[in-house]
Length: 135
Image 1 (cartoon, rainbow, N blue to C red):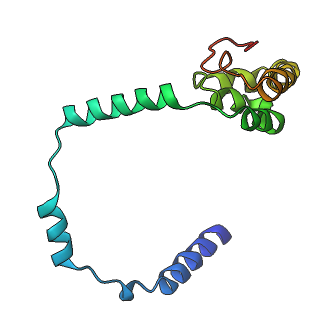
Image 2 (cartoon, helix red, strand yellow):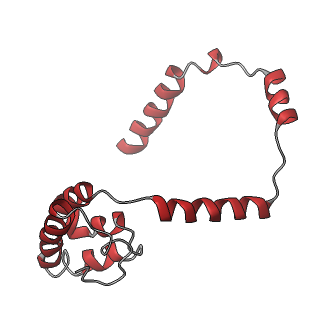
Image 3 (tube, rainbow, N blue to C red):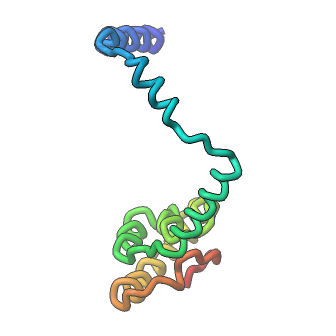
């Protein structure tokens, strides 16, 4: 009952403080936006999004320092692997194996990222690596 009362008071206070009466819609500006808009078909959107994603994937390089820092703080959840472009289920594998075999795999990943990433400045072999052991 306390939660319902608290929620009701919160919603009421938020509604009173929002000052919704101060907002005005300029219908002429909205009509001008719609009149000057370009019509794009779904096939054009799909082709544009696929070419944009492909160009981003080829030109975007991952920062080894960021990957190392992410591995240090949340390596047990596999977030560094997600940052490096591994499939989305890798975080689940890391998490459900108690942090990557009780933290051993992220610890090795951390030292590998330091050795190859920060010292040699080359983590290209770890990007988009689909293996559980990235090394």
